[in-house]
Image (cartoon, rainbow, N blue to C red; front, side, top):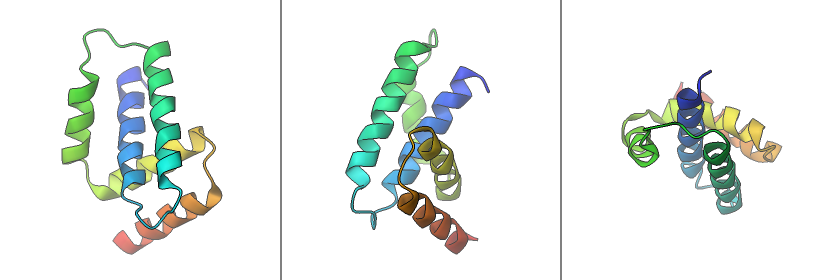
Length: 96
């Protein structure tokens, strides 16, 4: 996976977690994902890449199902609580 795709996956995963309003500790997980993304960008900068524009495009155009699927991959990277992962899997089942 190239750096651009990795960034898109992380951002999409972030927005997938944002959709999980029933998870009480969502704010903490979102903060952890934000830090992970910031560290990723700092360690692996992409020349001439508009991070904010790409993030806005993902927010507006990527489907909820894809965002939730990406959030499962993103949550693995930050070692998120199993409870949230199970909630997201349940939500994905509802969308099928």
